[in-house]
Length: 465
Image (cartoon, rainbow, N blue to C red; front, side):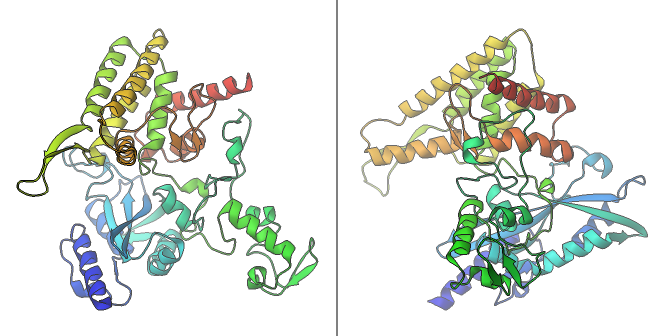
């Protein structure tokens, strides 16, 4: 049985990679490590040979991200990919051929391994890739007689970023992976408040523990105990006072201070892909946009109709039978086209950000009312005759696909009716990341100004309460 599971896992890995590589020898999958890896240097060199940068540019910007997924019981696969941040204008291809940053011209899968999406597995399987990444950042690339510098930023969902930053999980008390903001302070922001960034040294100082820059032996001033090595800090014989501090650090910061950031990047160069976690952050920005931005009557009417069609497509009834002659039962058919749904949610967001009308603020509330009506209608369509358990399951699946815009519990904050609680990432980090890495997000200068205006307006409203 163990050998069967091993072979099945290997075949699953090969099948999964076939969609990324046209020609692949199954023997390239190492038997022990179950890893397929493609050279980053080779991928970037081939890209620059086919699409050299314009003569006035020498800096190539790439984004490194990854994701993991369970394939079958006891089998997990994790991918690492890069995206070359370029557009069709400077690549010499037509707009019809362009498919965004996920196009085959710019998106390349470099690594797939049989393992979970956690710090230890990623560290073990990405040794070669991380070394190659460090060499390219330091030395650059030389292609066809031209010297290129390579700038690297990290992406992925919050789980992936937490893993590569040795933040295997952010605690409820300090949920933000980039800065030290307490859960209770998420809605107590001020216009002049600057959150302290998470750094290894700062977290060690917070927990009264030394960091990697400390020299040993090291004497703790609080407990007057001398430590000969970093391992002594987590040894069972360590004093209770230090053990309590270490426990405090692990519980409140969710990080082992002795672990390294795998990509070696600063927090400002890590851009969260907000669409990963069920569009919750995008839903939140969309909801806040509808409440705050002043939109036209025609846009409000069109958007209400769009929402009715959008939500309606997720709840349909079909008849299914397990076998011939079986009793027909009615079941909700949840359409699982997450990618298509993502586009449908983001497009109105861009329209709302760009389409501002200062004379029709009250019409934005009409859209807000439509959200409430649609939510009620969604749950009414669940039907009668089901047990509470099955109804709860179906309600969760519908919320997960269509999104619940009111009182939705978010990753870093919650939405309330009076608008006094905010998403920390959406309002603090998202505009900041867009300003630094604007070419990653298709937003105009006007849209960025609106986002900053919205954030400042919320601060003013809160300071007056």
